[in-house]
Length: 236
Image 1 (spheres, rainbow, N blue to C red):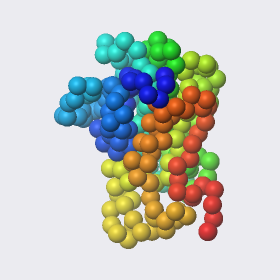
Image 2: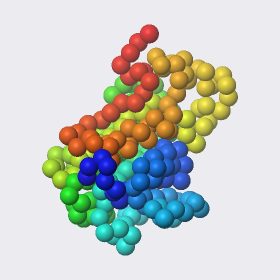
Image 3: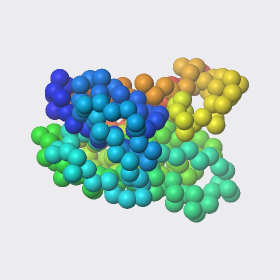
Image 4: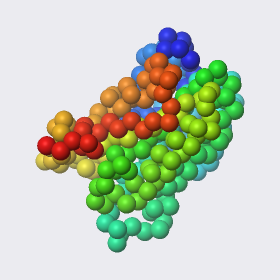
């Protein structure tokens, strides 16, 4: 789709954090949005429909709610930081299920809707810890590494009609990351680790996701965009 056209988009995990910010930016741009989350969103608008559904536990087929999808973004994620000796099988499998398998089954369930659009876009979420080794990130880096593999594989498999890209953030101020930013001291320490001396904002990541979904990124696919305050590539 062209950047000035109204499209139909699915935001999986839109009840808070990055997903909420993406939903709001898409609506502000005049697009139609189907939001899917376990909690649901009470606010209703003419171009927005909120569905209460666990897209990790079950495939989320949206064919009863949309004739086609111009784009889909999968936002559910986990943050589980432990040294290697503390990584448990059940935790690693849960991280994989939420971050990677949930995306796979969501895309399987909605591939036909995406293919009905003249062109469509998929956005997934990785982490800077896949390409930049960080202590205690074993489980989440493995799970998000699978997401990056999925991104490139589907970009090849679904071209030319569906573009698939991913965003790899560093620490972002979301409800999921709240325990790591729960005091001024923690927030300052986290910001200091980044060359830009701040942590990520949901609005920044949403702007990147919205560009990939509907902002004229028609020549972009198979890419993983880092939005990490410079921590993955700069040393100061």
